[in-house]
Image (tube, rainbow, N blue to C red; front, side, top):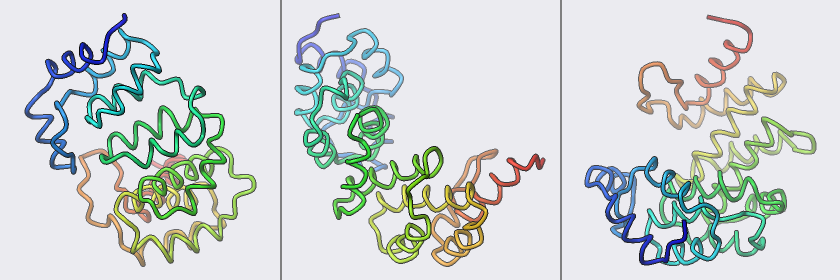
Length: 226
């Protein structure tokens, strides 16, 4: 399906929902949004299919729903590394950041170069992405990572980091504790010391993001515990 920018925005606006808008605002969203359900954005993307030109135009509107749709229309390999970096830094809502990381950054051929660049960055969205990519490597491709040095950084920096960064740093902390028994006690101790997410509300049946609980629960499952 071929659609112009105005046609696409009109379609998004027609799908807007007041409840979703209110939920987004609670999560820190600005007013430039329609409040489209994520499932409806996915359905619209499936109809339009890949369209880099439309995606860029949607992104430039800074509308939250338009940017979420743009992410699903972009072919990551068609973006230069600096374009990915600039787009990430222009994000101003966590859902957009996490979709961009998941669907663009993780599929980009330069993701490791970007990871290394963002791990040294003070911009909260860049740092969130850097720690998210590092969490992926901890779980899937840890060779070459200095896990002890990562724990040092987490212990020193996580407590005062921006909330956007704390979340993905915590994934790294838990990942190290879960996957590397030799670092497990220290990871748990750091989690206890920092206390982040200790009282985080968790739906019934879900695991707490508090690192000591998370680590112990995943290790229990891996060992066949009930």
